[in-house]
Image (cartoon, rainbow, N blue to C red; front, side, top):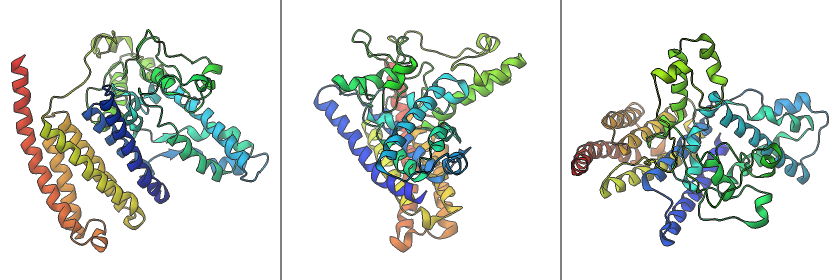
Length: 423
């Protein structure tokens, strides 16, 4: 966890710079594909995912090292050839897991956040799950384990394979010639993120596109069918924590409401989107039928509020950077308390981005949690040893954040009422 946290300390600012560069490039080319609130929501989702991973809040049913020890028919050295083989093995595994996520109700919940943005840009690549607590990924690496691919090879290749999936989340790169036959390109992945009937559930590949061509899930981007992005049951919120569990909550409610006991059990493993007939009739859920005529989710906010939300994100980056850089010193249970504070932080300001009536409650919960940590320990997780008076600065920030939250809760509500009355 500590090593992964240090990797993220480098990766996070690099991703942020690239996201902001794409925003600038779109503005410069008069083709801006990045909306402000959507971008902040995506970045916030990335932070929650990174925090969850650093805390180790996922259970791997079978560890890869264990499979190598028990099932390997040969044991090989960590030569460069095995790094290449491991990369292909990881990519095939990624294809299979990705396809399962899309095709079965229970697994879609772990992936819905990644598709929830109604835009397609580098920021949406950072929308990653916090709702997947059980990892199936390792099970599909059994063939690699049987042939003795060393665990340390997988440990090196896996982060590289993950980060290599970032770049193609953009609308600014067109088709790439002969590479379209080999690797996943922006064109291929635009199809994957689209909700057009022609594009749904296609192009599951992560690095190599030939898996899709071999297994019959490939679809080329068609010039006469512009991709429309999002999910067919739109999230209608900027809050990434809510989005992570929205499908699961719907499944739980549907399983409870249906009178058919068979449906109560099979709903979990039916194709994604399937609902019991009696529940569909009594409890309809809005679904986009015409992808070319629907209104994207948006909130009307003042320039000052947009500036404030960006300041909140910058402060959050500070808290997260301190956490990832000092997780070994913070230790347990402190790191889980810190992680809970980060989740509260994200929930609070994204609720305010939604113009939620109850955003102030979450802001008070966030600030109260921070004050309790400082009051009970007399410090902010040992920060005073490194930066004197930092805990005092944090306490003052929490007070200002609460007051400013109340200010915008009042002023933004008035502005929205004026906008509604003008229509």
